[in-house]
Image 1 (tube, rainbow over the protein chains, first blue to last red):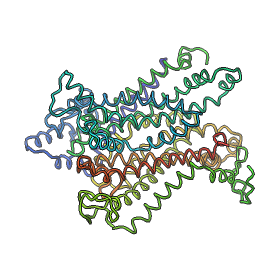
Image 2: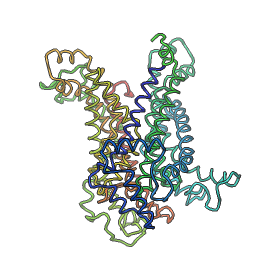
Image 3: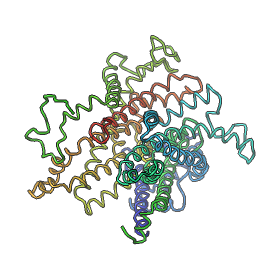
Length: 331
Length: 304
């Protein structure tokens, strides 16, 4: 148990370290002093803010210090939770801006990821080795995985939102409302949540269905399935065993795909002007707000790493073999 | 398999490496390839787009962003895909966008394939601590959310071109390929013919290039196709947030413009439907083609 998790945590720590280092290096080593030119170009309306940004830049980057000192300082302020001040929403700290956006992104991502995974797996398992379903699920699945996230979002926003008028197509709740815990507000929240969720859910669905179908076919060809069949076990039983075995690679696949789905959520949020992290990224890029952009990046990396770790734990819970191996039992 | 075509068999030509597996003649692959609807349909669609992308621009205005027509026209006989709010012809942009899409796909895919193959082959063949270290690097890049990395990498560049974009995409999208190639190379490197080559003192890279790679060439080709598709989607995502090439146009950039100038609210559907449809058709056909190729190369998957 120690060794397995120790290894995993080591890789995650290394990844986080790499991400922070990339984050630190890019503004410093890109050709042509990008930070200075960005600050000069940043859309700051009042000169006071501009001066404050310049002071902040000088104190944070401390370019007269040796490079290793700058690097250590960067880590130091990171551990204090200090990611700088947003240029777009001056003078709000970046951490605060991000914290306001995170609940929206999580509210979109968690249901979309989990539901698409579960339902996609079910579809795929049914489709395997059944002619009719296979011929429909497979093409639809391939088209869905090939769809760019933002395009499906655009199509849904336009057809169901603007032409159909069934759901609102921008924002997280009606402009007429203030955030509060009331029925009106919650229902508005849900209405605005539905289309971005649906879009994200549909694009991810196809990949899981295809993956599960292929895994089930592979499992049904294996020795144990043939043996069970020779014994005269009912079809359903064989399929249930195949499904349990096929789940494990799909779980690993979930960990690998997380980054892609998160990126998809960012793009989807932009289409629907949904005030999550993706919307922040768009604002940061448009307003040349690089502290915000880098802060969001670190947050996303940390989130993906945590989710990966959770999946590792689930994997151990689901797969009895890893558990036995860890307790030093038979191989 | 009764196809007795009198084709020269490349697998038995004198300078080919010793085949390890029971002979898999190329003409058999060709026989199944020509009878595989998935492969043929996928390939047909991809080729149609490729030809449009290569030849189309020669018949159209040299500047896809030129304002040559009345703004906001719906699709018609004269302007096939309609025009934008600025009077740009959407069909012209679309054709140039397809060209950019293939360029990004090929460049990004090849860069990723080269890195993935280098790391995968060396890790799988060498094993030991080399494998450990390369595996660690692969895992680190694998869990990094690619598009987010690309956002901050590209956002700091002053001028962005298609070349730079594809290079960065290739630089971040290789890990899964490296993993897959590593496991294949690992199983091949314990075969007798590789042992023989090693015993006779052949250099490592030569063994990899002449003995291992040719035996998994079909696998490598399919990996390249998937990397191509991934690069196209990544580029579309980058373009869509406004980090696309600063010169010219692309399918993702068209969608970015459409959203930026309110095509949704104005109901100008012909502005954002074609670019997305183009990407979906190209990438989707590539995926379907890949399934077809898998069936051609892997006899167990053939429906016969």
